[in-house]
Image 1 (spheres, one colour):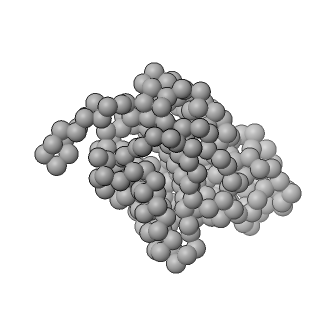
Image 2 (cartoon, rainbow, N blue to C red):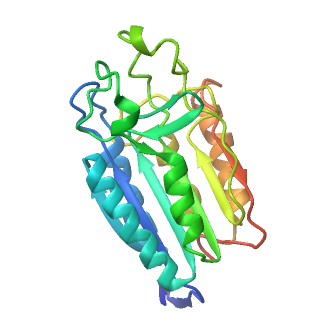
Length: 242
């Protein structure tokens, strides 16, 4: 698979498949930018040779279905799988959850049972048996429980997601550090995804250098209030753009 870049046809030796999800229109605590961010990421990844599955405003069942379909495609390809999620997420008792749009995240005491465990996504991607996986979460948005969270007070961290280690062969990237939150943003895109799209389009950078650049820019532009975080267990090199 390949594509034209700057007048040259670049050949990618392995299949690149991405699942991009954006959830904005929540029953409660809607967000401004996740679908915009997901749309922009979809376009950027397609320009870099990825086959992209794009979904937005998903229920739990739909999220589970598309994740399964994505992992099946990744397994068949044996190449690189990339999962990108923008929307609400939360930590309950040390577990991280991606929140579907039809969950009332301010009032439902069973929100975790109606959400998708990040560990499930990681496990299914690991089971695909492909060379490498990338998981990007622009999901530590302004906390939905900041005003009404009385029955969650003993279960959930009031700020951000729990720290998590990447499985072997996986690169994990978060919009902000564990235990912290990222602003949704007032412009067309959130700060993190906006900077990430710029960075992955720069040729000749290894994935580690791409995210180091993003971390530096986001930290600088947020005046130190947001610092992206990564954890990697990959053993080979990966370039978004050669």
